[in-house]
Image: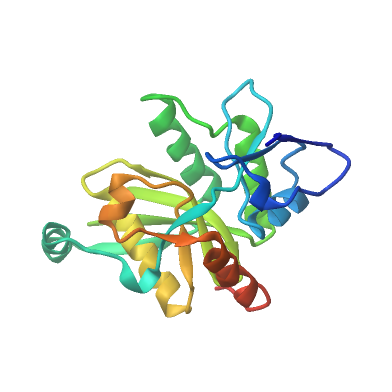
Length: 220
């Protein structure tokens, strides 16, 4: 199947079901707030490297975590009992995102470009993106950020500066989302780490039902 080319002056996407086996659906367009909101409302997200055109993905099978099913291992639970652990919401969205970028850029490279940082800061200002960090004994240990639509959180990236930092941020996020009756945390792609935290595959049809059923509801 062809990969569709998007025009910057037309905010539209092809049918997500036309994506290739790896999820690649389209190329081009821009990272405007309007286009990003349309993308996420259809399970589409940008993922590309610096210097490449924007690539848009929509995997056929979706990997998610249901907030109420987040898995806390015995070792992590023991760690949380030994330390004072708390959630820090929206300390500084841009800084959290930049920390995610630096952790990956210094290790294996990252898709979080200058343009991505600017675009998601715009989503945050529009109330459609949020950052959550974990503080351990008063020190920020790790965090994550993602997009919010209705009662769904679309995870983008995470970082860890101290032991268990990203795990704690994810557990704390799930707790916050569960209190507000969120349906899912979209993980975008499978990883062993996310599976160990309770991740599971669902069909695109169930995934979209989670989105459309909750699009008109208040988030947090």
